[in-house]
Amino acid sequence: MEQQPPLTYTGKIDKVCQYISEHLNDDLSVEKLSQVAGFSKFHFHRQFTEFTGITVSKFILMSRLKQASYQLVYHPELKIIDIALAASFENPESFSRAFKKVFTVTPSQFRQKPQWQNWHEKLLQTKRQVKKIDKELLMNKDKNKDIHKTMNVEIITFAETKIAVLEHRGSPALLNNSISRFIEWRKSSGLSPVNRCNTYGIAYDDPATTVAKDFRFDICGVIKTEVPENTQGVITKTIPAGRCAKIRHLGSHEQMDDKIRALYSQWLPESGEELRDFPCFFHYINLFPQVEEHQLITDIYLPLK
Image 1 (cartoon, one colour):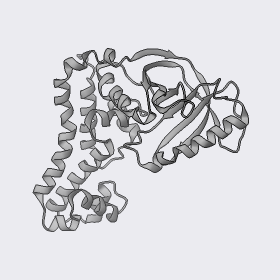
Image 2 (cartoon, rainbow, N blue to C red):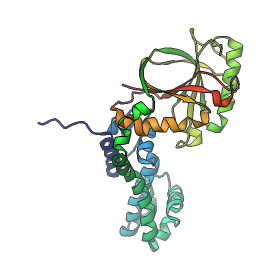
Image 3 (cartoon, rainbow, N blue to C red):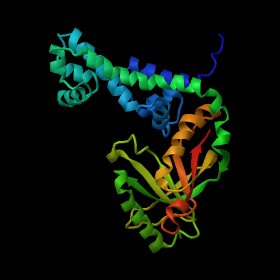
Image 4 (cartoon, helix red, strand yellow):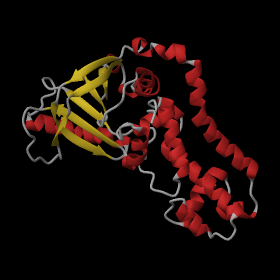
């Protein structure tokens, strides 16, 4: 049997979209979808969003609501509760809220009097978002050909690094509270003095597309010994050794997002590289308020296979 050529980046995203459309009644977990795409589960959300312009959860929701719409109108024998459960909603109430938020009418109202023009426009918006990337890639093919050069991306080998970690879990708006606790631990323990030990951040989630309560970010400082039990909740972890794409950001941490998005949406598809199972992480070369915000230097790392 003739061996099939490897899928292009676009082909992998298309494969995921097709899989979702064929398994709307199944559990569409990040683990499963990242396997379908051949992407690392740590980066799948960002890769899908940056490549399509829509979050995977929004794509799944719209696909399920589309299927539910047809069932409401063309299968009047089906109860709304059964349609809701088949679309992976916990109950009819959550299904009704989601349906009305998108289509401005309840499932019952839509069943009685379908507003197909509004329905079509809402779904068309999603389709445009998912398909726009093909046109953009075609238009920007030559421009993106040497994007790794214009972005000054380096491929480096990162050495295994033992770190003390305070795990922030919850709203990004409360991240500074966790940072304060980590600073308190650094000062009281003396195990990772900020003037002698590198400071890192590990970004498990994209704050722009993650529900606030589910946001995860590790605040880290390099250590030489294990972290003893402490009141701040700091623990020991390791940044594994391996190849990484590295790009330097100058200025406010709030403006780093543009470079991160460019790495995922432009550099990565053109580079031919694949991401491994470790999140994007940052090395804070200097810190605010020790220097002015515009003087901040941060290295951004994408772990590669």
